[in-house]
Length: 122
Image (cartoon, rainbow, N blue to C red; front, side, top):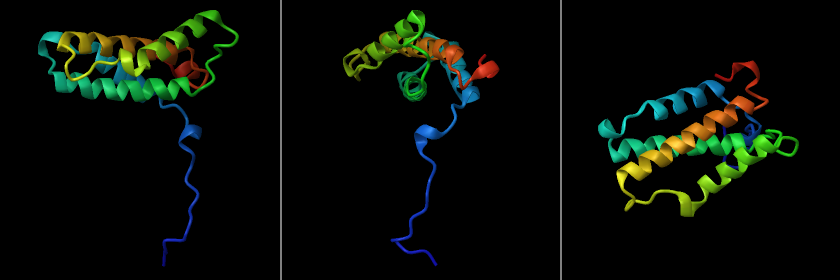
């Protein structure tokens, strides 16, 4: 019988491996979307998913301290993720669409350099 005071050890979210296949599929889906056939709702849903994946990648040591190109990518990612850079409900759909594409493209590039992805990065 389980009680409220029972504690189970759950794996730390930060310690879970990066799901490279999920990130690749998600960024592919975002980059395949067409502005003329995408609703604002579908753009927002896909953007949220890709932002979460970009945040996961930024939580990994990508080697930005040693490589200026990676450092530049990480810096661009952090700027894109600032709340002031994100689309709001009032942002036109085309601007939200291109923001989503920027996040997906940058997420894909960081996936390529992610040491956890190894040879499995697309």
